[in-house]
Image (cartoon, rainbow, N blue to C red; front, side):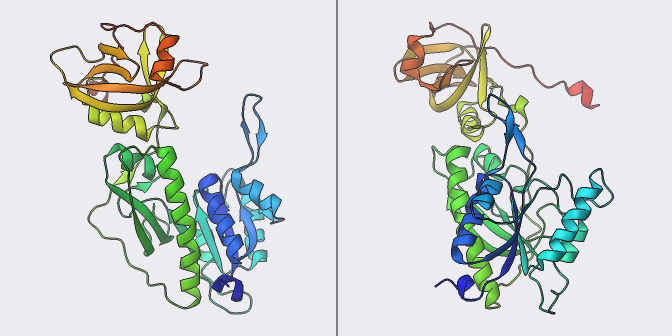
Amino acid sequence: MSLLAAQPLRVIFAGTPEFARLALERLHAAGAEIVLVLSQPDRPAGRGMKLQASAVKQFALEHNLPVAQPQGLRLDGKYAEDAAAARQALLAADADVMVVAAYGLILPQWVLDLMQIPRADGRPRLGCLNIHGSLLPRWRGAAPIHRAIEAGDSHTGVTIMQMDVGLDTGDMLLQQSLPIAPDDSTATLHDKVAELGADMVVQALELALGAGLQPVPQPVEGVTYAHKIEKQEAAIDWRLDAQTIGRRVRAFNPFPGASAVLGTETIKVWKATPGPQQGAALPGTVMAVGPEGIAVAAGGSTLLLQELQRPGGKRLAAADFLRGFDLKPGMQFELPALPDSSSAA
């Protein structure tokens, strides 16, 4: 029997996407008493743009867990009424701990303070614990999985962190490393990190029951920031070397998807691998076309495009893509405009 089942902790869970749903599922299965679930409001999704509940909310409803979906948590902000109602819900839940995973709202100071004051019966709380998808202090911020792949890191991992008011600056409670495979995309690595994080948060709460969690301040050295992924980053700059472009293709799969313009069409590139060195061809020039892929000149080398997608079409292996697209050596992918350095003055 899980220690959480033998000594149930009252848990508030705050999360929204699939990454968080897996952690909620694992906590629920381990026997934690989920007294409140916080998730982002329903959003329009799909071709019909109908309102759709988050993955976390769907799990909560399936298991009859109480759900709150405030639009904001600042008591003095635009959604002050939502925040006040959320505060009452948190107080009524009388939880031992709040677990946060990809929630999407910043927790203001009042939430952190509330989860530090003793419970109604006088027992101390454990505060707010965050499941962060990196080896802190590397890749603090919104997109740690994407940026780890883009940077060519050999490893990433999960840190269970005691939350404070800073951006992923709290003390580390647990940390475990995970190798990044040479062919990992954000999609595949996301699933590995989510699995690891779900296991680790159960482990962290079980250790907390036995007073076995030892907070460790984050090192001052090695801090990097994983800035949010912007759509404009998707454009492939063929002036870069093939290794860098290949990492970006993997990092931006599934969002926003690396893209390249050929003539009047914007083509998504979902899989690409670096090829051999090439001569003085203009970056973006199609060098060779075959069933194994499309070789394109890139920064002194070549990039072999192996999985592509036309607008409105499906993702296709290169051989299938070429059956419906007349691509020939010598054709030229557009080079994106360079940033305007004068505007930064």
